[in-house]
Length: 180
Image (cartoon, rainbow, N blue to C red; front, side, top):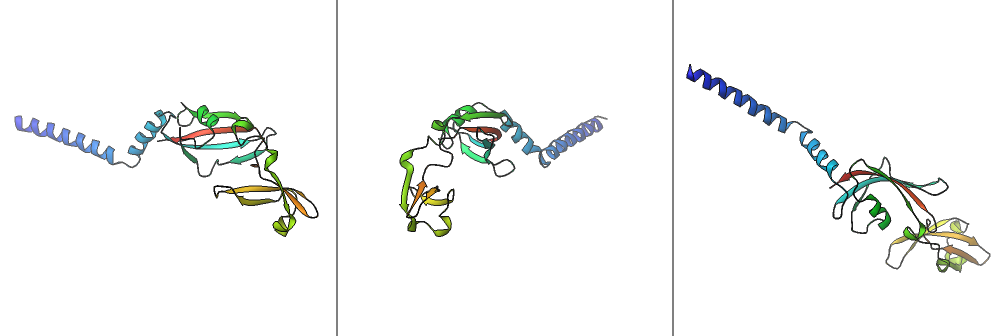
């Protein structure tokens, strides 16, 4: 009789152990635990954050959105996004949303009249010799930058080298997607 009870007890332990192993091996179980860990995490310095956002101007015009596309991934505290936006997102968790208004001085800056230049009309491709045409120039660091045609005259073209959103208030709607 003693042998039978030991055998039954051992079988129960084997079944319990097998069930535990099966739970560990089930697809998605580990991912759920990781999702829970990410959900409990907070946006803080040094963390890699994935967000989706929409930026609107004060008149309601949508300037940009990545909703439904690739998320923006940045490192909190590394000055990879506007500092005002980074500060507003600090302490949030996964699935939290935040609305943030960024004044021109904290975004792309005010419009700088020194960034408006006149060039000879011959320097501009013929198809771009119209008001609001956008050309791509290169800044001092070799990065591409948009250049807008502001005015076209007989012998000159006036170019606006300011960022297209300079002087504009930016209204962000942000959702935290992931924290690593």
